[in-house]
Length: 108
Image (cartoon, rainbow, N blue to C red; front, side, top):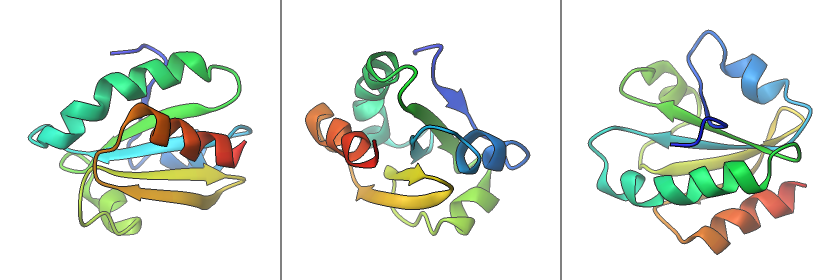
């Protein structure tokens, strides 16, 4: 796993994501979710490729169910891009790396 991916908690989500000065791709996931595991390597690569221009943050909805409820994460993986504290894009379900990169690019 990339050391560039932050793992948000209820306590630091707003600081990591909503107050970020760069766009943030947030992955709402759970340890038992197979599709979540499938896209994890893509997220690691994107965190490296977009370093300094965008961030990747993961939220384990089992460990932090309040964040899952706050953003209505009913199906996982659910990926949201945030820009200037607002949801900018949404992707539900596993997709390939090009589609995930496109989510980030649209927020840049």
